[in-house]
Image 1 (cartoon, rainbow, N blue to C red):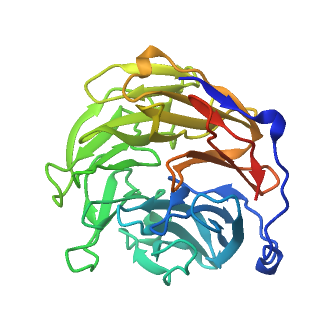
Image 2: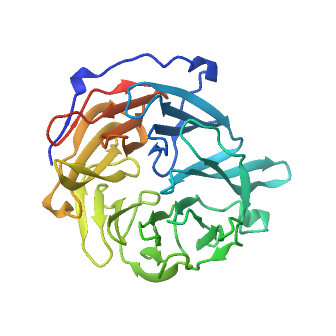
Length: 371
């Protein structure tokens, strides 16, 4: 699948009006999970972190070129923030909070907030607690990840102090169930979670003795552990994408080659090349009438790279093309209200850069805009 970027036509549009009224906040880091999302109102929103909390940029109108923001939401003491979205368009924010204490380890818990509509305020941040009561163990809690099933139920997965996997989720009435120990040991941050269209949740987490995997036997059931996958994964690099009904394709960085690979449980590991400095972004899109998978990453030199292939046809090969942008962390990928591919990157100066698919054949991207 040809991929082209309008590097020579990069736009340097000024910041939208109102950005200074938000205190001049700039991004320090990308959040975990997909951070460029299409909201229920048809407008895209991008999210990032800085030292004091959460930043959000929002399209002024569906598919338009204007953006507002960044809006700033203070969230003190966050060490990590993960985002997931349900089919209802609601965006869930799951943070790991570490509050310093003068008498020993910090007090660590997970916190959660929801955005119901693009551009609207978030709910209050509420604590999900910590599966450990002992403060020493609680301080060793891992990085959270989440997924929302077809009923709108949020599942939060996190590695515990014993390096097993823990689950907390909402019940049918919206109340939070107690923490469940899904067992396991010698796992590493962070879980990759897929919410299938059928409602089933699937989890993969890197480990020292292969990758651990859990699958719901049917929607709403507790995920059950299945056989480990005998692969090595750079911790924190795994992402999951549903590429066929109830079938996940996992993408991660191979620790030996340093390149991206693709894997579907029961199949071979497929090398995809590239030299990612962090996780890849992955999504499906219709390109030229074909179901395709679009991938993006920032390489070891900070270049934002883009590729596409037929969905579940990675073995036919793909070619990484530079977008002409430099970024930090994982790029954002999404489809806008008109089905066009949009790629976003956090620039080294903390600004947001956005490029949108144009009308040329294949995956041809227009010039990027500084937001």
